[in-house]
Image 1 (cartoon, rainbow, N blue to C red):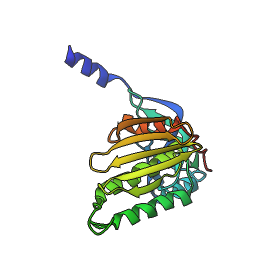
Image 2: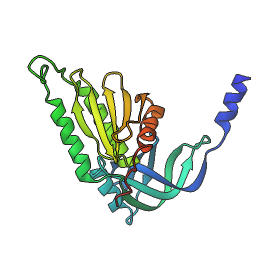
Image 3: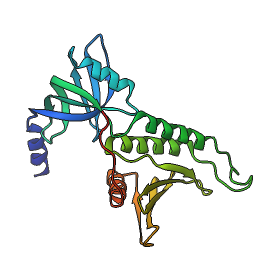
Length: 228
């Protein structure tokens, strides 16, 4: 029975339809006319650009840290709805949920945190922050800023070797204490007027956990809008 089911799934054909994909340009070649994209869901899609779309795609790959591209065209999908190839690209335009200045500020702040040495707090206390963990956090935050309109956080090191990200939304102060090694976060929100508070622990190593971080923040504040 299992074999029959597997063979049945493999036999199901792919299909084409007109679709718009929001993507990061990860490969672009002027000479061959080919490009490669990574969707916000992590899938890779290939295609050929046209004279009218080449400029937007080339610009997007140069600005991939703070910009994404929306591509409209005839797309080939697998039987389980995963995009594979753009057969006929009709339109490409850049977009972002943040701005270059905010993204650069986060990048600079991460660089500053990378310079902290053991004992940075008082020559005795204060763990250095793991470089690999900071790189992961930088990618996570910038990705959420650009793709999910996350407001730019204030970032601080903690003596225990974690990073605290903070946001202010009116009377609400929201923070995420992020364990760089476990890729987890303790979320806390406090209302400075009513003294209400809430907390939640999240696994940021999973897509569900990252989505929950965004959902937690959205309970207390309004996110930005698309930047052209």
